[in-house]
Length: 364
Image (cartoon, rainbow, N blue to C red; front, side):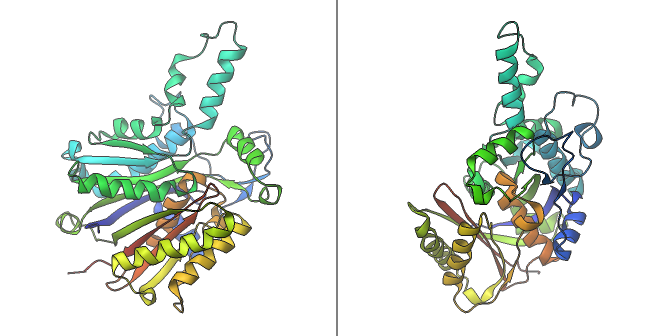
């Protein structure tokens, strides 16, 4: 079991840049999905959960961002706002701060654009070398660390819709292994025409109605004593994470029920203590199986359900992290109360399920 708590968080979402508009949007149940400008964003979708008016030059700065891709700019912005909210003391020992950032495939647009240039150019090597770094998966994590002077372990995690939960689990192990004193953990995803077409062709016809979304959520993980010493409120304890696999879709419900049940047992949390549940809710069939699996595990408990996907669109790799942000936004500035718990779940179409159990921290 983890001794870490979540003590600060930052979000870039279709509601705007910052945790305040995100919390307001989630609390009001307002949709962040809107019509797409098809001239600026050609592709198969006419609606999307875009971060409004977002550019690297506006939120990161004009210097050094000419070749920065969208997902990197979103991640750098989210990390920067988190660090700024915590003050200079947080980065006084930058080598003791780790960063674990989840991603889908890095920037799909950068990868495909660079490959296209090598094929249609007069010579295969007639490409812009300044854009090559954008084609590697760890570009967003690396740039976030470089931009903000973070010198501890730097890790990129990619795991489909469960990326955020996998990143959370990895961050806990990183701290438990003594590799850093504090960990920044989260995930980021961008919208692009290239990603839109890949998603369109990869989905079943009945799933193509769900619009895409983009955004990032980043969290500060540290011990409760460190958080209080720095004047930060422990918002939630990271009790445990669990993952399982299933072979056929019909098995997803049972796999998730066992996953959640095992996590609650490990965390010592009774189903009745679960105040909030934030499911992934991906696709009608998988969403129904996910809901059923959670209900099987919780029995007669009646938590509040936080459904992000209908409000934000399919944010892919950033989904779980935005679900976790929704939990913290709903819990409020004091976080989960002692004795309360929250559950973040996901069922991926590729045969994996996962969950995280959070608990209220002592307020002494």
